[in-house]
Length: 266
Image 1 (cartoon, rainbow, N blue to C red):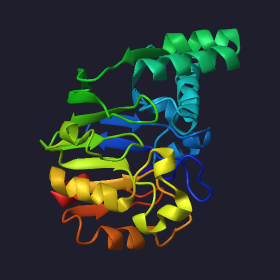
Image 2 (image 1 turned 90 degrees about the horizontal axis):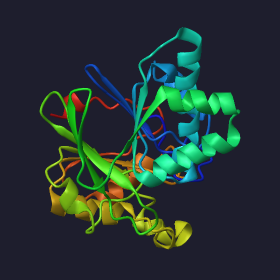
Image 3 (image 1 turned 30 degrees about the vertical axis):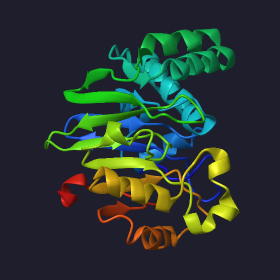
Image 4 (image 1 turned 45 degrees about the vertical axis):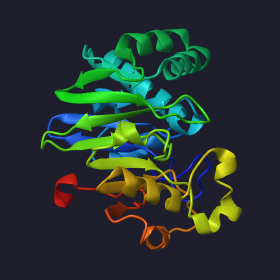
């Protein structure tokens, strides 16, 4: 987990993670700045080593870090003569926003290298793509806030991992993720703290909301991200306490930098 914080964190990085499954290495979102480069190094890799990258939606806390990933790919191609491109997956809003930001903020030559180094894959609701041997389905997560895309990916061990971007698991999108073995989704704060953080005004949901829906949907392993970070370092304890009695599966509320071994929970 490279970052677990919400849109305006003060003690954590914006929510994003790196998925490794044998030969596959997939970056999911990139946070809001060049801090993504240091987060990747801390996770034992370098931005220039990435070949597959998914961006869920075009909000600043997910897409501005993506510009630095594209720049790293362009730099790699320029310095080493590398011909393998970075594959970027996102909906049409994501691709348009990224191209526009790069065109407006980079030197013309650098923007040209970004286009040369990146293969943009526009994905829509129901699309299915093979990503380095992993069958990956994309879904519109029915966000009330922004057009946002989630996915479910088949792991080599036969299990599936799904992610909703920063959207919660809700009655509007639960059917798309039913049957997933792992789900990474947003939970902005505890229901007990709703008056402090006002999640519903931001089109977000609470731990209690997500826990109930995950139980009804039959999700066995749930990872909560895009969380407020004022409750750190007690966040996991507090969130698990609120979910107790509502959700009977395995609940993980990680801090930045935590490694989750998916095989350990089979």
